Image 1 (tube, helix red, strand yellow):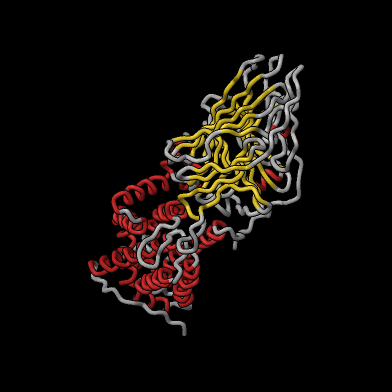
Image 2 (cartoon, rainbow, N blue to C red):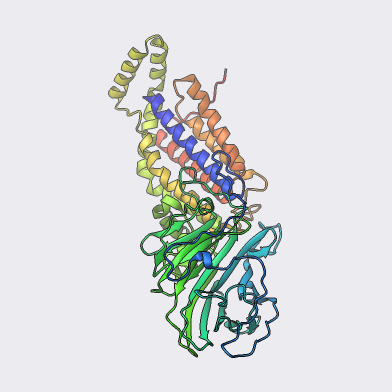
Length: 569
């Protein structure tokens, strides 16, 4: 039974570490080490229309890339108006530097001024979330469909409005299209101080002589060449890079690039609430339409291995000379939970904890509360692990008590194995007799570990997913808790504490298992040399507290702590 118990523990530990290492490789932008996913095909494919659109489909949304010369279409009987010159310009607030393109009034670049691109000490340039260049496309677009030649994200518009926040609390940037198909589209972006959220007002002006019934679309377009995502089996708890759809009925729905490529994307198509988003590690963007607006969600593949996610909303008929307005919101920023919760219901779910969300969210809440008192994320991690250890003290104490009893009778068990090594059945019977006499449960140490595994895996993903860890210092040489320790001091300490724990445990009767108990911590400790410092810190803290608790319980039970050094001869 002792062998079974230890085998179960090592299988659980080994599989957990393999998954954690595999997913850290994914989050670092590298191919998965153990469970590589199929690469997304880069060959261009025709757009895949979504079903159910009232009079147009996502396939009718103009291609997201390329340039087009769009001549203005005047109202019936009017004179032709000259096309506006195309230009790009930037608008700067205290938290963002947004680059607009008058072709479509689209956002083609967004720099987040409060977040640096590189780890601490490697540069101070702002983090670029959106951009449009040969090796990267990530843009936000909107326009009209439903009839030929309506203004869309390829229509060159005329821009007006201030370009810098200065002393004001908000600024409005206005784009007006020429009349096309008898319709003008006026977009007004309102950017506010301290906010990553933009109000985007779309005004549809009927400049013709007949009623029109267009549809408004909003979309986010991104290339998938750098995406590396896994299936549920290989990635059970991790965040991912790709589109997502949120609806009140089905909640948060991730859509893999590979599923879009294969036309197998599964998400709720029609809704009156929710948002569409493009998600990546630490950051996200999202389009949100007003509550109660009937719309269709879509994802599709566009040319050059780019993918889009968006919404199409039918508008009420617009009479000649009338204007209809739709207020939308566009979020482009960090995955800070409190910030996301204020923008829209369910937007905080873009910070994806996977199947452990129900545990991870309270852990993050507690970590955030601790940080509000302590003021340092590193010490907040230490305090959180201490609180968790206190909460599980009684449960873990039972496990250590079981191990202490096993350690006390270990000499008798070893003698039995030697005496009955030629008769395994008799040996098992005698061992069970000793366990019964001493009231020892060989599996007594398993339950506490099994109960705690979900909590510590959830905490792992809290630390891995929290943008607050980026460039957050702890002490001395640790200037970025989201990056590996530059001098490998923490991983060395973590390895030492893990080996110390192994030395305090009873020696397995099986010599091969005894060797594996020393080899496994060494093998898996190598992974921590590449893990973020914040994750290694929480593991060290847990190890030290576990050693102290084990030492205390052994002493209290009259089992003097001793170091069982390895014997590899």
